Amino acid sequence: MKKIVQFGHWAEKNWLALVIMLSVIMMIFLCLILCSWLYGYWSNALHGTKFELMSCWSGVSAVAGGLAGIVGLAKAAWTKYGMDSRYNSPVGAMPLRSEEKK
Image 1 (cartoon, rainbow, N blue to C red):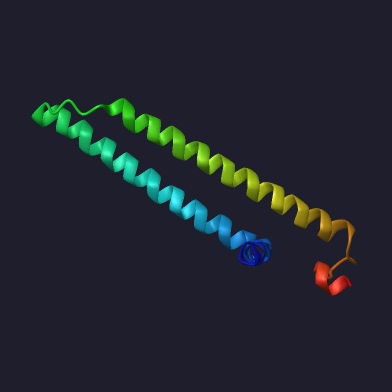
Image 2 (image 1 turned 90 degrees about the horizontal axis):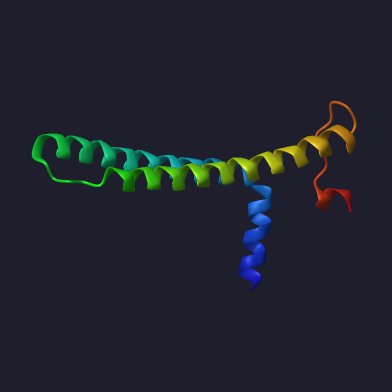
């Protein structure tokens, strides 16, 4: 339980890096699915393998949904940072972290 809480604190401090890493991973999945679709498309045309192209579109839809979720989380975190910067700190100064305010 303590490890989970530690990870939560780490993730809260490094949310932008996590969003970037998750986005890169999802883009890699998207590229793999699209390469699979391209191979299936050419394989169907040249060798008549009967590769089901619709299955790749399902994968693309799933990855796109995952990317939308990541973008939504990033926007929520960025909005919180913007509000804290705008209203809770002096103009031109970096916002204080919660542990610095105590």
